[in-house]
Amino acid sequence: MPTKPHATTAQQLNAAQLAIANSLADPEIKAAVAQFGYTTAKLNAGKALYDKALVAVNAQKSGKGDQKTATADLKAAEKDARDAYQAAAKVARATLDKDGLAKLGLAGKEPRDTAGLIQAGYTLFDNALDSGLLADFGYDEVRIKAERAKVAAFDAANQAQEMAKGAAQQATQDQDAALAKLSDWVAQYLKIAKVALRGKKQLLEKIGVTARTSKTAAQRAAPAKAAATRAAKKA
Image (cartoon, rainbow, N blue to C red; front, side, top):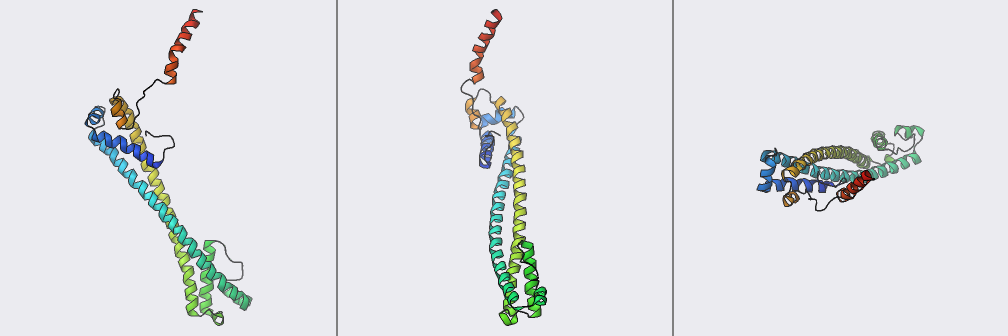
């Protein structure tokens, strides 16, 4: 791939598109590389890899966005559920004996983790509804069901966030695989294209290969090195 070692995804896609699209569009380039096995069909195969990579990149961005939204939804739902749970638990602890607290699942400390809060919330509100233990303290059937719905919403948001997280991870893997295949194809193609288009600077630049315009440091130092070698032999 004609990119820097740490090229961004956008740079990788741009470099690939430049190499493939311009090779297909320029008759001279297409004819030259065809002599080295890169026929129109083979170039189109490279374009198909580019198209697939582009789709994968877009899907990965969408997946990350969905995960971010699901995480925000989960945080909001957790706040509502925890507030509902804490309020009912405080009322219960202020009015019930140990047996009553045990019946509502309030014998221990408030759970901090997601799974623990969801389960504790269901236990608290389901058993409060069945037993009527909090009915005299503002928790009638309508209110209990409304508060329980907040726990259920948190439960659903947690499941949605886990699904979004898994989908985002899969999308990232698919993107990486598609980019790797595209990168390998372009890297090999450009090696052959450099041979097919040798001496044709403008055509090489059309596909993203910058032709060397000056000697390398090693080339510039070669005459002096050779002279020093000859002098050493004469000495």
